[in-house]
Image (tube, rainbow, N blue to C red; front, side, top):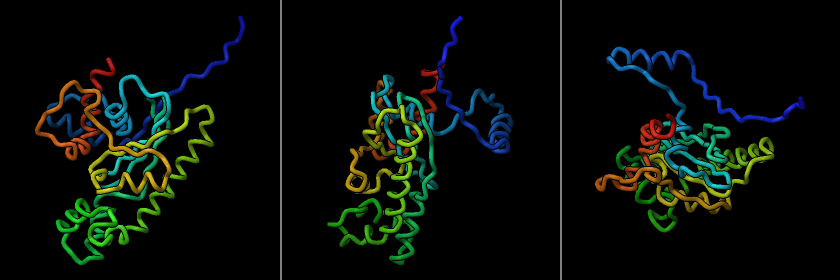
Amino acid sequence: SAKVNSRIPILLGVAPQNVVNSYTEILTKASLIPVSLEIEAAAITRSLLPIVPPTNASMIIDIGATRTGLIVCDKGMVQFTVSLPLSGQAITNTIADILKITIPQAEKAKIICGLDPTTCHGAIGEILHGVMTELIIRIHESLMFYKEHFPGGNPINEIILCGGGANFKMIDTYLAKELKLPIRRGDPWINISSRPSHISDEESIGLTSALGLALRTFFIP
């Protein structure tokens, strides 16, 4: 019979055994039965991308409190992930240290002023210039990595922001200008028929991973 030359893409997620054991041990001690463990990128993708995946590829940037994750998706599947040197807490700490203010004050300044050059005399943008420049460099490197190592992949036509740090004022405008790509904040309710009216958009975007994990039951039989 003729040989069939075909390739099947496989998504492989790994985690240190001691980390896995620590989670399963805690669940077992709480009289719960662990059914599955999942990498965060899979949950985020499930939450932000529609059930029928878009034709082009997307880049998701999850700006969390302790780290930022970059996820490239194509045809609804995670292609690769990268950890970036940025976190919401690091931004807050930098603002607090340079302006000599408290952490709560710095957090408030981050949300109110952000990267808007017309507020706070553009001070926050100047303080975070080095941090944001490094972020742009890392994103460019990831875009080039995808282009070079996934020649058959669809082009990335948008960047989706999520995580609590996505509420950082004008970060979407800043990234769009620097990267020359459309930027939007993700909607983690896109695959859920109804959303609680008391949860704001700002709060919702910080729940992306949790909502994606909850959806796993409906996406995977």
